Image 1 (tube, rainbow, N blue to C red):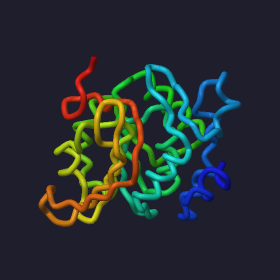
Image 2 (image 1 turned 120 degrees about the vertical axis):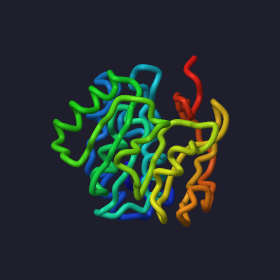
Image 3 (image 1 turned 90 degrees about the vertical axis):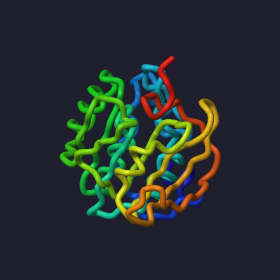
Image 4 (image 1 turned 60 degrees about the vertical axis):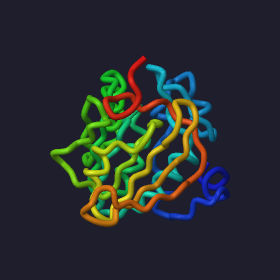
Length: 208
């Protein structure tokens, strides 16, 4: 997976590649899908949610430019795979998931693997995690109509936010870098087209 799907497609950060080599992706998918765990495609994890394809996980993680002292906010824990990859690279990961059953399953897998630098919360991720802000990096693993103002304000100066932005069914993967104390002072970078499930919440899409 790492050599053919990641390195050959342009992922060059050796720390990210090592993290993707370390985290056992097959433990985060349903047993009936284990034989597809390392294919470069998203897979269903229940509750109409998915685990992102490995390349997208690596691309988003690399764009965050994490260090061993980074404090990261993840919106959309899902099965916890991306969370574990972040935990391999950062000092602390705060992850919010709106679906309680997914968060509970992720907690079991994360605990089984021995991670101690991950904090999970069930709730509306579009609010972020204000009491722990600011964050050096914010990653949103669901498509939003725009970058929520709440997340802008919780991003540290110099920090990076990766979020899919666009319609409910097709988005552009955007990277925002905060430049000053003004949360609207952002550098924008287009990382390419993508398609994620919808970010449901007060500052995202309304629940159907």
